[in-house]
Length: 617
Image (cartoon, rainbow, N blue to C red; front, side, top):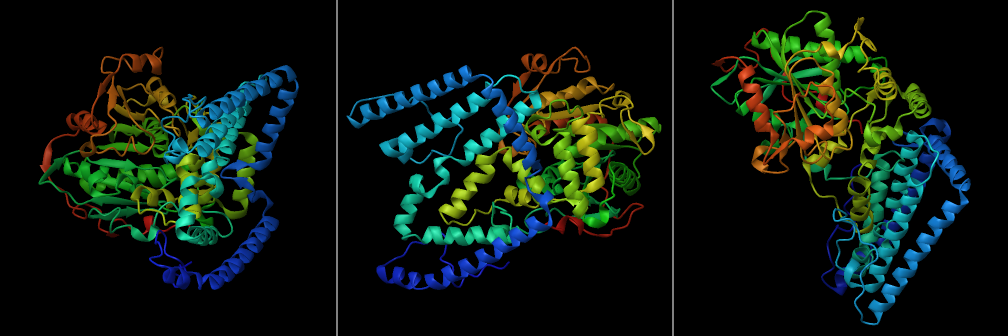
């Protein structure tokens, strides 16, 4: 919906005089009438959707009934041990007594150490008032004391199976984060100051922002994280010159225009995740991996996945392999005339690549020179916090939703990932947009994050069940793709693996398991930061650093991730340079640069192509 700025107070603008205030407040009756009408429409739309689709009730990929069942089981276990519950209550009481004592001492002018303090990484309480004002300091400490008591009490309950325990701990943390005093106007000093200074304009503007986000989500809250009008794919993101040289119903293949006079003989084909758009690897010139690779003299290709709709409901994981990974490889070879290509897979794109290489090995296809995996799971036994959404009950609920639409809604997937870092990716924007009444700041990474994609029903059901729930990929012959049993142990191409130390989506110790699955030479590298920032870490940024262990025999099954790290060496800067040093001697001779369209494949359209421009919302 187009924003109507004619009656909306501008975010962040302060009245210059009493006359300005009077002029602005004179418009408020019309503003409030508009808000009331839009609110009524949204409530009706929400009720209609809930009546028509009861299966849609959920939080991201989570099912509310499953969450409720987990907490009922938790309650039963807690009631079975009343003594432990009484001890927990007593500990909370002692904590509050200490808090009251210290608050009293401070009120009398004495020094008193805080009984509880936020983590160093917790940005919610950065405003000086949380420390300097005794009232807000007390509110902060009271919240932290209660939140930690809630989480420690839940964590201390015995008798729950590991999955249920993980689920209740995760959603208890979500509940505690939601109740933070920073999320409410009357207990957030920054919001109170803004309200006094603007005479409530921030709250009116915030309500308008809330309604606009509800309208964008068609009755569901879709929190705006950035100024989406500030970016346009193909202009200021995904902008390097190139051509689409091949396409299938599932993907377009982009070949980038060379930036060097000569290139390496063996090209590079990147398979990004289809959970998001490919241009996470091509946001801006200074942090674009595809531009950096091109500048190093590699003929670079990347897959741009289609954003599936109901017409692709029956698309399978096999289809993503045949019409995606293999089609891209074959097209790159045809476009360049090379005999082999390097293959790169990111996240689920890497999972697909591993399965594809096992399939190609069974078919005696030797056209892949090397494989590189970015934060890729092949063993799903420890999937991290995403595992809270994975059990038979919740997958069945997701499948029921997908039966109605033919796909998993992009918003459900996005919400699930945002919940992994809810304070940063949900609540900080609630405060900024709805309480402070500000417009979100233009940020290319968050624009990409909001440009999420749907998951076709058949593929996503297979992926959740066979990979996450049953962990069949790592079993020899556990899966068959294209009619061929898959065995990752047969994958013998040289392999480079990059994982990230703070990754909550593909935990690095879980990704490390692949080093004992592949039979070929494998180099494992660990980057700092998380699933996105640790990968998109250009050398010029000089951030995070990385670890290598060149002496480690990474193919030895007895070696653990902890043993690898204990013997690893830390390096400053970006792992990109280490990867290129590994890739270069495997890339053949220097030859004249290839232009898109010069080979057997003709140009279809300019990069970044049509597929990437189809938005789910």
